[in-house]
Image: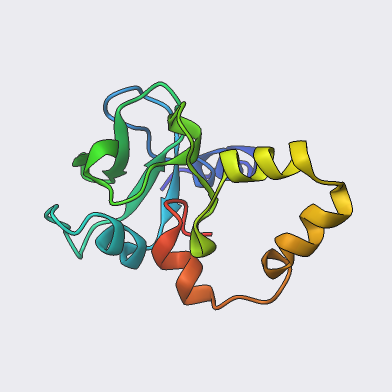
Length: 135
């Protein structure tokens, strides 16, 4: 059995699976998130799923075994992959466009009052199920 130096062991542990379409390392997400946002896709319960972090790739999620779920198969848009108005706070359906419109016509204090619910504690399950990154 080969002996690994500490630096080599750290490197091996930090290797993340890459998207099969663009080769960008992904961010692991919980299986519940994938199942909730990809209702019409076949999800392998015994696999690990990752969010493709490339803004230019058409992949939404990919599995450790190489399965790809296109971003257009998700029930919500992935904010960093879209150019149109998208949710920035998925649980309350607040879009980037709503925030910018409010900033343009209101003071910062008014923005904080209007969207104060974003500072309130939220149920972790709600975030896991509604945000593509599961956060």
